[in-house]
Length: 312
Ligand code: VAH
Image 1 (cartoon, rainbow, N blue to C red):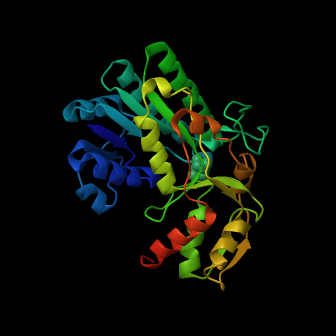
Image 2: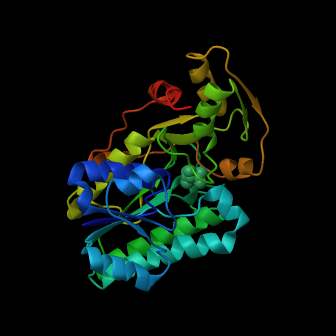
């Protein structure tokens, strides 16, 4: 059985649906700190769970005979700057609880998401390598960098089979993001359809690595299905798909909605974005587990607008 922690989040929601479809709903236990969308909670077993509470988590693991855990709960970059200690507590204590359950052999495999946020202002920005300078300057990035160190430590010291991906900014039409710096790339599509205009909180030439959610979910399942001895990076894998600026995503929308306009009002999230890479070298993921992205900006925009126009 598989447990998803943070199943009502931006990635967790789509991961839950995909895993339920693939393995059968009854094998996928969704959990979150609070109730989420009705449909998700009705589509299979759901538990209200505070994964920072070891005993509560251990109880769910035992009750459902869980063997694999996807730990998708975290406080993202923008919100984490407002509540640093709450972010550290949530992001780290959930990870320690899951790693320790695996060390105690109560679970056998873990997926834990890292992020391009582990890179900092003095990291090479273009085609950022798998192994390079990492001095994250955000609470979220520090928690993800620390988490990577702990994952590698638990693998080397206790043989814990934890796998991880450094997600870029993720774009989905099924779920809204929560408190991230890349959220503009989701909001812009909603605003293009509902208001015909969007005020972007990042400067027009802020280039960031991005990925459509279908690619991110496919990569997650792919790394989890890779034979253990083929996983060479036990901190976390760089993963790339596309990079674009607010100006470029706006132009891709205008190709479909010519009257759409954008203006810019950068806020505190600009300096977070300035500290991150512009593009990612994911050759290790390509080599070790055959990663290949399928969605570029044009295909992403087409898919987003097509699916959102029926919903908004
Ligand atoms: C954020 N969407 O903006 C997340 C992600 C790379 C960005 O970590 O914080």
